[in-house]
Length: 484
Image 1 (cartoon, rainbow, N blue to C red):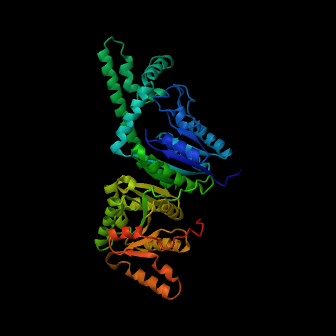
Image 2 (image 1 turned 180 degrees about the vertical axis):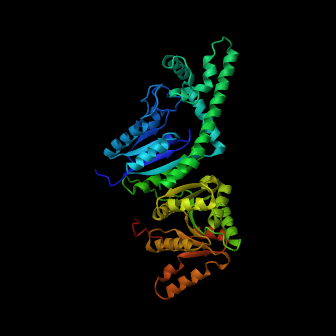
Image 3 (image 1 turned 90 degrees about the horizontal axis):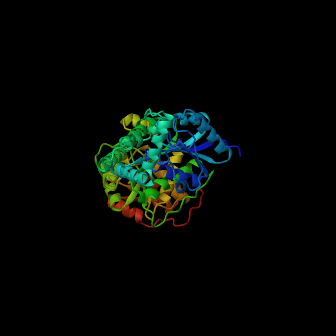
């Protein structure tokens, strides 16, 4: 098959963030093969210390560029090998899935992939600081149980053979976190069991501390180096918060697969699951990037966030960090946590807003997806609402032209039968009276039918708006138009 473009997925994240798990899930869903972008997993020895994926983890998904270097070699030809492997995967009508967090290999590989005309979806995993240390400790404990100490002894023997006993923690596989930290333990040849025990516990503590610091350094690199690069190259990117493993499917794997499905536009289709009663309710929120002249508009946004929190409703919105929308998003994150808010923003607007606000994406505003264009944003927003539980819908707060455009578009979608979710406005101090009068006039003049006159429902309070969403929709029939 000849491709008009060459799609690829790239999964980034710090150590112990779940990259391997997500790489396997994406590969299974979209006929992919994983290319490890890791400067240590390429070594043949050191499977435990470099956290290579185990056989049961990879679930028969091919993993490439692992185990191909000797202990004292360097991955100098990694980029060319990776590009060749991507070309091989594409030639077999499969999808390259790049998985890793290497600060030295990632950007050079992406640069070459873009030069080779790959269209890349970036998925960034961001562990929350509150539980990241526990993830690191769990990873370290698992390594010890798997036989870390025996493996470290093997690496010491290789060091003596290949480096003539000249220790170098900046070379080959011995760069891996864990080997320097346990070196005093490995070097001890005394007879005191107490001393050996002390050195062992020191090694464990130092390995955890070094791994945690390395993870935080990777997060800083992701935020301040990789993210600007991806935006500059207009790479569609989704940022997902990693919290607790019990929420992995809902907060990480589900959104990632949904975004990948949209990215591939059905080339390797995964049909969105219709909303079920067990799914959380989702509100798609429109509103101004300005605060207006009256503080009542921002207050209404915060009041709505409180009601969403009380009713366990999640929010999807345009990703803004200012004005009415920024107030609603940050208030809900403060109440319900980062996973309660998902912003979707086109790359051009993301860059513009960051220049204006001087802020890159922060968990204060929840998770964020950067997409290529406005159409993609709108499609992902409606899919999120359609996949939400009963009572999901569209809400407009006070705003300007953009808010009106989005409100009238989802109203038109309802009229056409593309969706049957409620469309509600929070009419703060009569803000929407003029629009509602216009709708009445349009109906009177015969441009819309009488039943379509009340598609837009009105609430005067946050509590009333939530009740509005819970009400029965007027158009209960199935969608009549296939949305493209």
